[in-house]
Length: 161
Image (cartoon, rainbow, N blue to C red):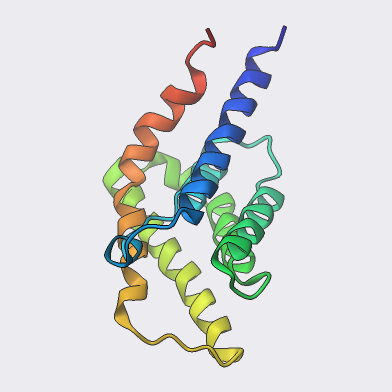
């Protein structure tokens, strides 16, 4: 019989797998422009609400997974994920005290930092994508933060059948 903690970890891992698969699923171009980074959202939620996990390692693995799905330079998203997971871990007690709207604004700033890191690495490697639509997924991901704060804990902590 699995303990309650093991069940929660299994559910969180399953949610991360579904989020990663969502990122790799082919969809029409106009929907791909606003596709949120659900795996990054889960990593940020885990960083904010769980002090026991080594979230920088989890963020690194999640970033490498996104690099593999997007076909980008290996470590590009991983560096961005680790950078904002570090910032979230550094200020998690302050961010937790904020209401959800203020948390959403902080998450948006963190997502802009992550997107800037990816943009910077693209520029260093000679793949500059200077179109403004690359920032739409940052907005859509930040817009889902209130949903993540509300429904991830409910889904993770509900009893197994």
